[in-house]
Every structure is written in C-alpha cells, then in structure tokens.
Length: 591
Image (cartoon, rainbow, N blue to C red; front, side, top):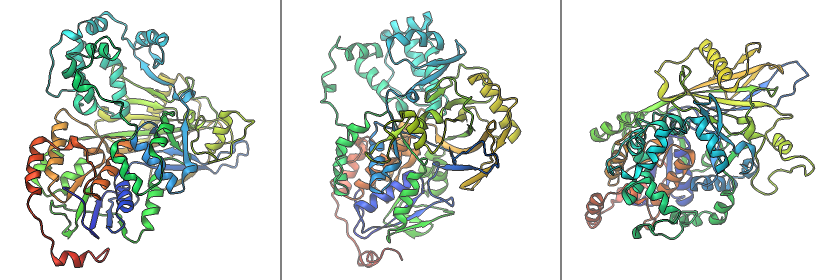
C-alpha cells in the first residue's frame, strides 16, 4: 500500500485473528469514515487464541472446583514490548482493565528452566554469576571445546550471507554444543523449529550486525563493557521506550504511552484473568457494534487480486493476515505464490493437564524447554508450561482493578484472582513442531505420551491415577465429572500454526513488501508481519493502520529497499486522478 486510504473508502480484512482484529480496530479508531469487511474462514474470531472453560459436574462434595481455563494457544504476553503496551491500553479503553494481570520480577513464577541433557534434570536459567557454573555443568556446556570456541571466536572470518542459527554458531565457535544444549531449547519455545533450518538474520539479526560491525561477537562483548569504543556510526542516544510512530496514537487516546510503557517494563509477563481469548472477544464486540464494520464468517474465499478485488468484489484496500499456505492459494500473482509456498509452518500439539490435588510440579517457575540434545525424545516434547504457578502469582496491574485482602498473602490473593478456591496444579505440554511427521496422535497415544513425559521430566508416577479425557472440539465450554485424585487432560492439535523463517526468508519478506507497496494489498500476521508473537502481530497491525490513515505517518523503513524507494519516488511524481464513480460509491459504507 503506497499511501493513505481515500475518504469513505471500503477495506477488506482477510482473517479475524488477532492481527486482523487489531488492524480493523485501529483503522476504525483512526478513520471512522472507512467501511470495513472482515472475512474469516472459521466460525469464530480469535485465530489461534482460544481459552476453553471446563466445569466440574461431579456429585462429590469434597471438591469444589471453579471452571478450569485451558489455553489452547498463546497464554501470556511480554511485559516490555510495544505491542503489549498497545494491548494493555486497548483493554483499558474497552473496559477490560480488571482482566490485566502482571507477574512481578521477583516472583517464583518468573523462574525458568532448561532440561539439562548432561544432568538429566531441570536446570535453572542463571540469574547471577553464582548460578552460571551449575547451569554450564548441568546443560553440558562446561567442556573444553566450548571454552576453546569462545577464545578463538574472534579469529573466525565474517560471513555476510544469511545462514541458519545452527550454522552461524557452529562457524563462529567451531562446535554445536551451545545450540544443541541451550539455544535449540529457546527456539523450541518460540518457533517450535529446528535451529539448523531457521534463519539467523530473521531470528537474531543483531548477531549478524554485530559480526559485521565488530568482526566477532567477543569483540562486541568487550566493546559493550567499555574495553573498546563502538564504531562511530553506532553511537546513538538511548532509544525511547515507545517508537516514534506512537505519536499517532494520541489522536485516538489520551493515554501517556511513555508512562504506561515504563510501568509495564517492571513486569516480565502480562496475563488476562479470564484467559487470553478475552482480548479478541473484546475487540470483536467493539467492532460488531460499529455500523461501518461487517464480519463474514465461514468465508471460503477463492482469490485476491493486486488491484484490490476479493472474489471479484472491488475494495480500496485489502489487508491479508492469514498464513502463507492460505496466501498462496488466494493471491492472483505467480511470483508471490512462488514465494508464499516456500514459507512452511509447523503443527503443534498442546496437552492441557489439571489436577485438583497439587502433586505435579516439584520445581516451581514458568516452566522449562527441551533442547535437541535431550534424546531419545519419542514424544517430540518441546517444553512444559507451569500454568498454575503463573496464575497463582500474578496480581492486578491497574489500581483498584479488584479488591485484594490486605491481610492475606500475595499467593492467596492470586489464587482468588485466578478463580480457584485452593491451590491446584495445571500445566501444558508443548509437543510436535519440527519433530512431527504429520499424523494426528490417537487418544491412546496421547495418554501414553502424557504418562511417559510426566515420569521422565517431572518425576511423578501417574499410573494409579484416573485420567479424565476432554476431547477438543468446537464447544466453547465443557463439563466433566472430576474427583480430587483425577488427572484431567485436554489435547488440541493446531495445524500449520507457526511459520518457519528459513534462511532466505528476510530477502523474500523484503520482496513481498516491495511488490505490494504499489498495489492495493498489504500483508500482516505471523507470516510476513513483525514476528510470531501476539505483541509482534499487534504492533504490525497498528503500524499499518496508522500508515494507511495518515499521509505523513512514518512507516517501517526495513520494508523498503533503496531500489524500490527510487521506483516509488518516480511513481509518486506522476499525477493520479479519481473518478466521479469513486466519489459516488464512497458515500455509503456498504453496497
């Protein structure tokens, strides 16, 4: 999209996930004159964000369990990102400030672990130098090859071309130990992908920049601690907490975003009391009440053309927010189709587990991730999230959001806020990703995998426990009979949910945005937006909505190459005319 949308124009948004909903929301706030039609393939909004309540209908009076909230997708937000700041303020404006919960830095739930292949146990991620040595020993990094690799790293030549994360560190350090034992676990938690197939320029662009600027990572490290001056061109004043484009936000809200960002920076994590799906539900409710917004669910779209036609219907602009596979089937352009088909996504199996009797978690914290060195890994486990630890340690962010008992402990107050009446244990197994072959596991296979994982990684025996299996379907609420000793398991299989940014992805992303800039199409979402996280998608949607609303709005410069900028400058110099038919058609929201 080359510039702002004309007055009283009509916009199509393809996809009612968080990216599509936020783009429609911000565009509605910036430009209430624009009519918006949102197309969604499913029967509900929200995309991968889905919170399912399971109620207990047992006659056993010894257990009183409120609805159990199982997150079937993302569940928490980073507290220090620009996208999270926008999310929190949006919830406040929509009257959902009571839902915003934050996790203090000193909380036990902020503790993170890695499965140590050397120690064959959970190893805490170090928060101090004292914890570093046990971490290195437990993860298998305390070896001569690793130390030698770091000492000789500055002698390695610079490679300007893109490469995988695995190849980058193998080239710089001469060993795969760091990736095998630690970094692969981190990538499992974010991308569910293989470090040998994921682009270092896409995932860790600063590493390639530091290598180019300093010659090595060790030289960069010395510079950072003041042993060597930075290159002059890298000397910059401290960056503001919120980017410059946030100034446009003042046109729709009176929030002091800089102050809000500073307050949120104190907390590493943000959660919503009733589940993360509260966010898309609130956005959908707001948009549904706007006369200029229309939703079309169960939409089986066939084509989108670069001149703004969706299944033959003309729009002034079309915002695409679906995954690359859907984009390849929709877009009516051979070059873009060829690019979209190369961006593959992986499948994730999430297994929610709940016990009313707290016996599952022995090492409290946020959870742990599993590196690729943890073999055998027949279950394809990527990591485990300790949901109950987070829920029982968060607190309201906004003052007076919900009254707290001043005589009770923080944990007791948190249990009250998480809708529980007493401590419980709830975890989520993350499985699959690049380990999956494509077959959907059966109920028997899932039960077997749960027992195997709980025994090996958490050291608990669930053989004598009764499993209550809650199948995943379209029902928003479920009801089962639960006793205090039961283990409730609820799997959900998410197909093609996380894109894998391959080694040529940065160039292809550049090509996609350059190609679309002179058309009536723009693209967001996880595939070609700003990343795979919810805050990343929200920020990309805000940035695009602002750019499509105001001619002077600053846009992300990374999406425009110098060659493309010269082409656009010549194109903008040519006068463009509007027709009388356009003016007549723009007088109504929808035809």
